[in-house]
Image 1 (cartoon, rainbow, N blue to C red):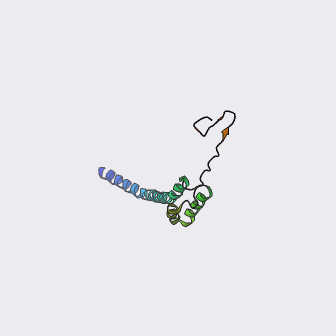
Image 2 (cartoon, helix red, strand yellow; image 1 turned 90 degrees about the vertical axis):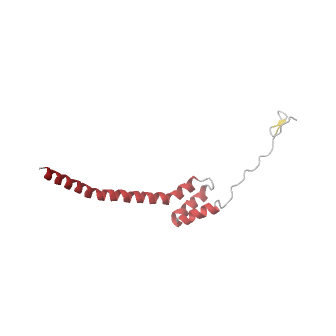
Image 3 (cartoon, rainbow, N blue to C red; image 1 turned 60 degrees about the vertical axis):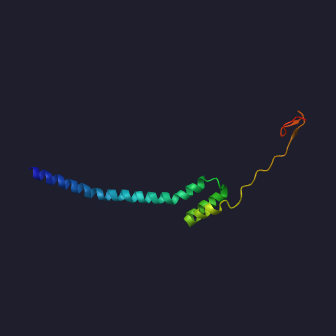
Length: 109
């Protein structure tokens, strides 16, 4: 009786391991596909969160990544931004005639 029980347990374990092979293969394949997608999507995330470019230029770089792959990402790090950011214009100094002083100068007039 013990021999028959041992053979049945061995057959059940063998069948269980053989049944797990497709599940493990699917799991490993999904991990590889997910990892490949993450590696492909990583430059898009980096450009989307970057402060080097804004607006339309950022959109163009992301489209270049999608259609031209990693070469655009390498070019992004070397030549972005294509146009320099506009510098803020200095505000004209104003004189407050009511109080007799300028808020841009230390001393009262």
